[in-house]
Structure formats: structure tokens, C-alpha cells
Image (cartoon, rainbow over the protein chains, first blue to last red):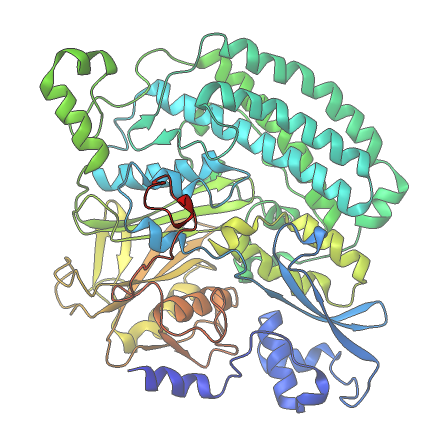
Length: 445
Length: 161
């Protein structure tokens, strides 16, 4: 069987990296350029940047990463440079691959949250949410989740979007050279994480949103904590607006850099701020609504140039939109239960365990064996801070997923990098990586 | 048989098409012409230990299944394509010409399941090292374990002495 695959591969060099021009003939070079830029050889030939003499020793291939500080983790880029200009670029990934999809096949649906939450570690609650929603859809209980749980999920998801975008401001600032912004961004994010710690017990990797609802009710005084964040942020955002948005150096570094067209973005499957920066108003919260997003008022921020500056500005404004949503959630947070009361999937309350042997056994069985999920397969997608995060679960009727796949937004989004970097400068490459806001945890899973 | 001339099913309210392998490209081409301009996701499932899964009439289950999630921005619709891939000949044509974004996703499926995509421009391993043997997400590939260095069981530990 592997002979057939080997035959298909025969036309391909098994190496993952870019090869120097001197080793390639013209056709191989076109094929490689086409593969990296995701276009046919004919289209690659039309680009016109191929006729660099293959024997020319003016170009060189350098590795940027996986340990380079501006590659946001372990992204490795192979860049072909002519002087300071990037001719070709190929992202090479897998340095953080830990087989999380394989691991997910041996964890029950209750344990699965601890696995998926570590994929996109900057928006863990969105990962848990999409996994829980997929499980609930398989169980057929997606319409029975108590209102309070749904609104709590929205609250946490929006706060998580804020914390993720604040971290983007920090890392973007650091990559461009606005180092003070790095300190400010981390500081503001920490305020949000402190709230998460109060609610879920952990700053990151919460495993708080679970199939059937959430793990616990909001703690006393949560409203004041959220209000404190909401009251603190607007002034500080104004300050960062002054610090960066209008500043000539900032604009020169970002405007017109890393441009991508809407056609390219759609063809590559890019979502989130990258797609919106090209002017395509696509936000799953509005266009394929989930939770109670149709009941809150917010705007979808779009750009018009598809450059790094648009992506920065979109994320900046999305923090404000999220704050708007959080304020509405504060006004409308309903009372009631925070998880579904379902014999099969809800453990009995703690107090019942002390007095009832059956409750104790029930509790023990749910947490050791888990609950069975009917056979079937679903794909559920929501809007994470980075784009469409999807979860595909195929169930064979047992207590663990038969196959659990996460469609990670940055795995798809980093395919835009070769397009955005082509013909740019090395210094711009740093700005481009930063503007894609990759999280390598979910790229490699 | 429906709109696209292939068996169709409904999975928890989601529309799923089941083309045969030779209908795969024409079906996806028809879907692209019909406005499904984004390929949101492409993945695979190895049904080695669960061959009795329910499939619509006329579809014969094979070991592998490639699952393609398409999206229409205009109509705000999703559709899923599930195509059966036999273990004896685990190959499928690439969607690269229609959806260039599937390049990385098909490489991931190749890397994890050993399904070859004909005419793919750069079919190399993407997540595993390039010299890796085996396809990790196949059901007959063990999870395995590595020995741990430290343990709380001090009596058993080599370092207790």
C-alpha cells in the first residue's frame, strides 16, 4: 500500500525546506515557487521574479527561527534573500507537534477540554467552547444549555478575545520596536487573566467550559471585577492609540507592508482579522451566529488595504467592540443553573455525594468512564480571536471521540506569509509575522 | 441522488455529500461553481476499528475517509464532502488547483494518514520530521510512551539509593 504513496511522492523531494537556486532547474524552481505561493507553475512563471540567474551567488537562503524571538514561538521560516530583499519564503512548522489530536482519541469528552485548551494557549476558552459545542451537538443537547451558562460562555469568550488582542498589541509593538507597548500590553492582559483566575482557578488552560455548560458559577463580586477592567481599559486604549496609531514611525513600518488581496485571502482559506483586513466582512459571530450573539449589538471591523496596519487597527478596535459586548452581557446576565441537569452528563452536586452512595458511584463513573456519545460526526466552527476555529468530531458511540480534529485558524493563516513577504524587506518580514498573530501551539497541535 | 448527483445525508442538521472517488473532483468543482469559494478544512478519519459506521445507501465504507468542509461566504452556508478512500490504494486527487489553501491541509493528511494526493506540488511531511516512519493518526499506529525520568514512587526509583 505504501508503494503507491511512494510512487506519488517520487516526483517530490522529501525535504521540507527551500532548496538553493543552483540546485534546481527552471521547472523545479517554478514548481517550488508555485507550491510555496499556492499557485500553478504557469501563474508562478507570470510573476516575473524567477529570472534571477540560478548560478548567481547573490542570493542566499537563511533560516529565521525556530528559535528567533520574533517568530512567536517555534515558527521556522526559510528565506531566500537578495541583499535585504526577500525573494522566496517558506514557513516550516511542526516543531511544537505533540500529537494532540491522537491524544484526544484516548481522553473522554470531559477530559478532552484539558487537551484542546492547550492548543491555542492565548484563547483557551474559545478552544474549550468549540469542543464543547461539537460534543453537545453530537449529544443533541445544544438547545438545552441553560441561559446562564450560555451568557457566561459569551462573557468569557469576549474577555478572552480582549486578552488575546492585548497580547497582540504587546508582541506587535515589541516586533516593530515599540518596546514600551510590550510592557503595557502584557500588563493589561494580566488584569483579564486575574479575572480568569478568580473564575476558573487558572490563568490559562482553564478547562472551564465543558460539555453541558461551565464548570462552576461565577464567584461573588465578579461584576465589580469585570467593571474594573472595563473602566480601566478605555483610557489606556486611548493612550496606546496616541502612542502608536498616529505615530509616523509606526505608520511607516506597517502601512503598505504585507499586502494581501481579498481573492488571495479567500483562496488560501484565511479567516479572522486577515480576511477582514482585505475588506471582506466575515465574522462568524454575526454571519453564522452561535451562543446569543444575535441579541447583542456590535460592529464587525473591516479594513480596506489588507496590509499590516489594517490588521493592527482591526484588532485594536475589536478590543473596543468586545468591551461593548461585555457591557451588554453584564446588563443581561440571567440567573439560573450554570450547567445542564442531565443524568448522563452532569455529575451530582457535591452535597449529595456525602449522603448518597448512588450519587458517589454516579460521580465516580462520570469522571472515570465518562459518558457515551451517540454515533455520528459534526463540524462546529466559531470565531476565535485569530479566525475560524473548527472542531470535527467523529464518534463511534463510546465515551471517547473516535477522531477529534481541530481546524486551527493560524495553521491556515500562516499560508499567507509567503504572499505577504514576497519582495519585501527582512525587517518587514518581522512585521508581517507579527501581524498574522500566529500561535504555534495550535499550528502544530 | 440529489442536486449534485451524489448520495447526500444529514448529520445533526449539517449537509454532507458522499461522492465516490471518481466523482470527487467533479463534485467539488460543481460546489465551487455553486459559490462554495472557501475550503475551510480538509482532514481524514481512519475507520479501521469502526467499519460499521452508518453511511447513506449506495456508499460502501472503506478504511479511510477524507472530509472536506466547504463554506460559501455569500450564502453563509456550509457543506461537507466525505469521500471513501480504500486502504489498498490510499490516493486521492488534490484540490490544490481549486482551493490553493488545501496545500497545507493535504500535506497534514498525508503526514498523519499516509493518504497520497496526486498532482500535489509539494507532498512532504509537514508536522513530523521528514525522515519519520509511519503515519501517526492511523488506528494501527500505537500511541506509545517514553520512559519517565522522575517518579513519585521513590522506593522504585533508581535514584533512591
